[in-house]
Image 1 (cartoon, one colour):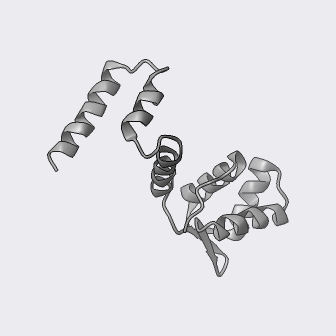
Image 2: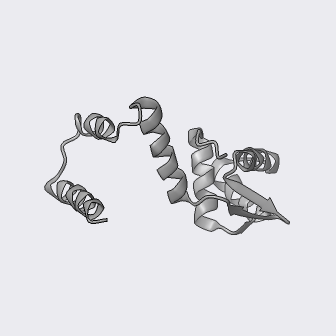
Length: 120
């Protein structure tokens, strides 16, 4: 079971792995030293936590994902809809667009998604 709750820094760290995978753990340490000014031990601690959450694996010093970035954010979105809107996608969409003016292009894209779903 993947834990979809990540802090902001954990998300940035996960993005580094997703962009660079498979990546040698030593190379990951170097990137994190530059981006976050982390020590080696900090990188390995955060990596271990994300491995424990079921997102990544570190096998023989090579770090790779167990779940893609797209799968992660899709599941995270589903979790938000379930937990915050009682599983109602229409309620989520209504809340999302209530304070956001959609462009005609965005409306067209959303309509195309709905039309494609109806033809399935």
